[in-house]
Length: 251
Image (cartoon, rainbow, N blue to C red; front, side, top):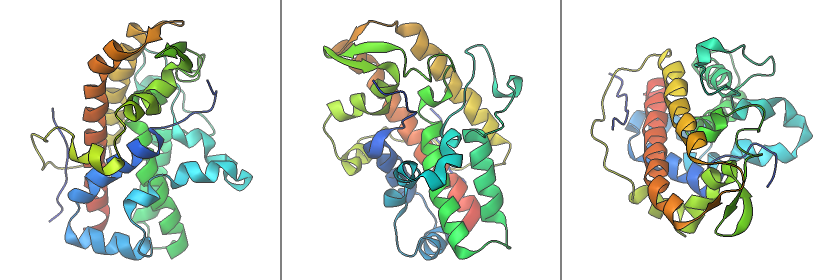
């Protein structure tokens, strides 16, 4: 029986949760993996943990051999759109990427090295999906061109949500993972079609983030106080959903 888990409750590059956020999300997932899943993941990753693997897809950005995966980290959507309303990018997006990874990991005809590569990508892209500015507008590059001040320093809206709110608390990934809300429900059936619902759900957060901030705003304590609970909720939700997918694949 498969245990599926869910939670109910200025550069111009597309960033992500930052290493702390990605690792915290993967740490949450590690708490809820079945023993079978843990064993199979350990074999595929040759002993590497999903926590250390969670930043791999960013680590390879500096290598031009992996340029084809650049667009897999995000989706460009207008605020009034659901994913079904968009014309998917020919270069891919994070929804396409997650499904591609799932296809490969469910296949019996791929090599061990391919499985390891795409498992690392999947771990990372579930994290990217749960950072709302990864489902942002094309014209401002997911908030990278919404220039703001963060405690008086030049920044942008994407970066604030990627890392600056997290870094402001000065916690390690393990401290952050242990200080997230308690999930209300842990077991639910998972279907591949659920991923598109996740995209549309996270995009509802994106809409609210854009509504609350304008270029030139000086953000600080009040913004962090109001929004850091959302950051924590999304890291928890992403971690539990990552565990759900990994248990679905490997239990």
